[in-house]
Image 1 (cartoon, rainbow, N blue to C red):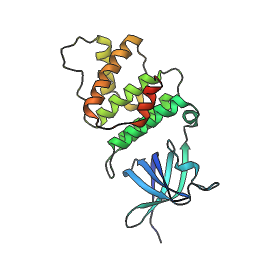
Image 2: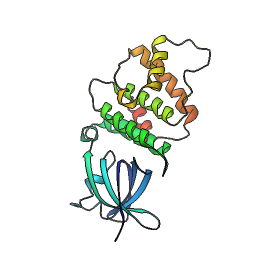
Image 3: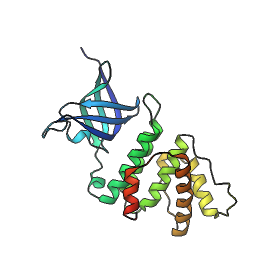
Length: 218
């Protein structure tokens, strides 16, 4: 008998294999980031067709082979369909998934990053929250989770009390309470400039979705 492993996680990306199959990258609570082979997942009416798309969050039943995992079943609780149907929301969401893929590793404890991605996608779905604010809060907290955020810049510039408070709040807040505030436009511009500088300094990855957002002026 095969030993099955059930994990909770989110699909970060999929890669077509052959004519009908997929490799699925899943960020999981139990095993960090893993890649699983999903046989037949690109066939119409296959039970894994919808469950192996990016943004899918739920339980995944796997079995291990000598070199990889195979995906047997999936029970999806959140598809984030509202983001898929919205070009802007989809690209912001894909950026979050790309960032999570960049930061996470197999067999690491990635529970905080998984929680951050999930809560950030939910925040993108809320009309009351500006998506640029969600993006920059996500970026900062991702750096905090991975131990890379250096705090307020020590570059001799004068920053407003509002942006200093925002940086402190995002650093110290639990992920569940991240998206509970708004910023005035001028404070958001100041905040975004800080995060843009840190991203260029600390993240050596080109993100396709971020390039598209830039081209769209978002």
